[in-house]
Amino acid sequence: EEDEDEDEDDDDDDDDDDDDDDDDDDEELEYLEDNCHNDHEVLGKSTDDIVFVVTETCDWLHIRCATKEAEDFVLKHLAEESYGFRMLGKVPHVEVTTRIDDKQSASGITMTSRTGNGAGKAGISTLFELKKGTELVAKSLCTYANQGIQNPGPTIELFEVAEEWRCQGHAKLLLRLITDHFENMFFAHIEEVKFNIHRCETDHAHEWFRRQGFRDWDDSGEELGKYLGPEACSFSD
Image 1 (cartoon, rainbow, N blue to C red):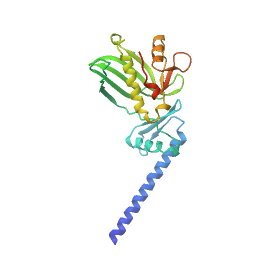
Image 2 (tube, helix red, strand yellow; image 1 turned 180 degrees about the vertical axis):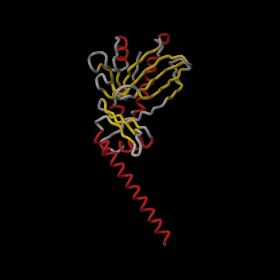
Image 3 (tube, rainbow, N blue to C red; image 1 turned 60 degrees about the vertical axis):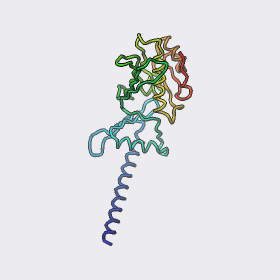
Image 4 (tube, one colour; image 1 turned 135 degrees about the vertical axis):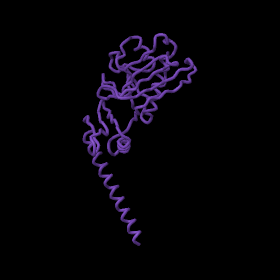
């Protein structure tokens, strides 16, 4: 009987710990809700270490998590629609290289995507590189908001093919791989996510991107875009 009482006491202690954890979550969530429209940092309870950084830009809320615990907390509450948050995509800071098996491109082509913190308010970007061996064929730098016209969504800031590799289908291949990357990232909401091009400054580039389904969103010829999803699947030379 004494052992059973001790077990019951242990269970009560566990329940108290769970209640404390729930209280901590409620307190942190209330702080997040109250400050979600203000750029701010959240510090650890017992240290001065930054746990996560909240940044609002172009109608999107960016939350950069510094620890696995912070990521778990944010994902848990973003998944609960009653709190008013909805996760569109998760952007891991990783470098990934894959071999491209494409019959229309030269053999031996690889694609590397490298994501990390960049400059600016929504400081995150992904660099895409096409290579044949060690030789750079084409590259593109993408951010996650078009600051020029305040459009949220992946944004092509730079897109170029090495001169000796032009007119061989590599631009179309790179664009298709980038599109696939972002469609996989935002899979659950692809038809709601804008895919932007910031400062498309030459007539040749403007015409080429228009043939790939992009539209002139600001009537200046420089800020182009379309939504991810079915309409993003058509590419032409």
